[in-house]
Image 1 (cartoon, rainbow, N blue to C red):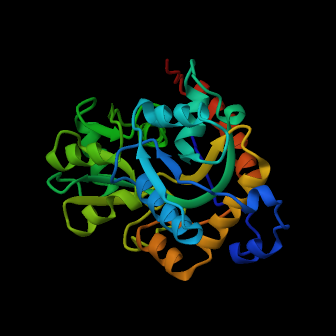
Image 2: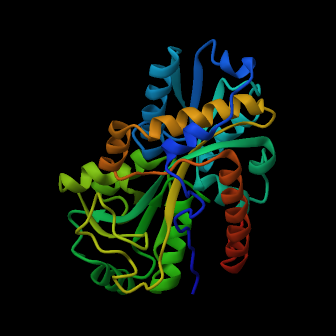
Length: 329
């Protein structure tokens, strides 16, 4: 059985506040940054986790630096459209990407790519980890994972699950679920979480593996039903929802990370300045509470640590794609 594992980054050994204090003084060039508005490109539609985190971080940057931080949504191509745009933007620190684990996966499963994640973009910092949740319409008769699997097996090829696009984490989570549960859920790709959620609530699709930050309001309002979380441990935002591992799919453990990246060639001093600001923001209690209440766990990392994380994931997902015979054009 296929086993995707994206465990907690154990390389984060010190509190993010301490990281801020240990950074060396920056040259005058970095100290003058920024001198004009910064644009954070969100490669998905408004309303999803990526959009939420970009705005949360952008508001903190704006408050610190007194420069406008503009959020620009560029959805499409499984989150690759926005990444391609940033990769081809000037490397001056004024056009940034709110990246996610989806980009590591895309690097592994797409045969043809207009950019190289590890060569054309430079990591700045991982912002947060977010567990994924298996959700179904409130009208679906299945009340737990066991009942959902039984329902899917009784109608092979009839039930479908939505994702944020081909080659994204939610796509591969669904394929891992099919592999471990022995189901044949059909994959329906969307341009982002928000349109997929709309179709889920309308009954056009019967399931979705979505980040907790995106679907939490719909779960609490009763519009969708949470059957399980995909992480090894239960989510603090959904303490009563069991894990997939607890529900019979032992070893299922997938968490989605989100972080900031810039075009390759961006001055190291600017990358360090941005990383320092993210660490500072994540150390603010109000900021941490804001993320935790939305189902996101604050992380914080250096550029080098994020690069190591991405490199390991690309290798792991390349092997997985070969195993399940998944290759996309």
